[in-house]
Amino acid sequence: MSIVDDLIANLIQRNALRLNGSLKIALVAGGAKIGGTVICTVRDQGKNKDIVTINAPVDATVRIADLVIPVPKIP
Amino acid sequence: MSDVNGFIDAIGRDISATTAPKVEALARSIGDKAVADYVPKVSALANQLVKEIIDEQAVVLRDFVTAAVVELFQRYRPELAGAIRTRIVATGIEVTGENIRLDLKNRETGAAISSLDIPLALTIHVDDLALDIQQAMIRLDVVR
Image (tube, rainbow over all chains, first blue to last red):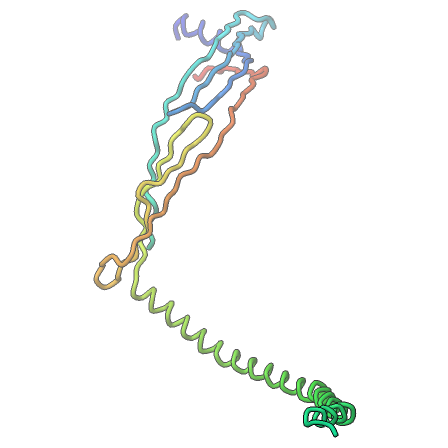
């Protein structure tokens, strides 16, 4: 195992992610709109200390195509 | 000497005073008797007659309807055609029918006998969805 692998493994095992925030999902014509903010904090569990806080605004639109369902046949 | 009209009037008054009450009493007694004795009998007879008619004809009607339904289903074949289109619109989901119809066809020949268009158009209102994330903890692990 390389030193980089060890570094990454240690980082992963040592740290945890904490998520906070709120999202709003609304239907719009042809899809759904997702908006809000997600705050992600990386915490060093060994030292019990927050390392990085990421504030990520979310503003996305999901397109959903029309769904056509044939009526069932009568046997 | 009285004239003819006075003579007749006098007789009429006498009849009204003496005979008419007797006739009225007779008519009243016949009426009371009929109400007391014959009306219940006629009513009972009518009820019994109606009951027997219904009892007998109900079987005939049931057999006829059963045979008619069986014959109808043997003779005709129902078919549904068309499609349902679902699309997302602002604040809801819209469901519309496209050429939805019920065809009735002859089972032997396949010929269409009748067709019934079924219109379909409805909108299901969907409120906005709010999602709160509070202290969601994600721990990672190394896969070896």
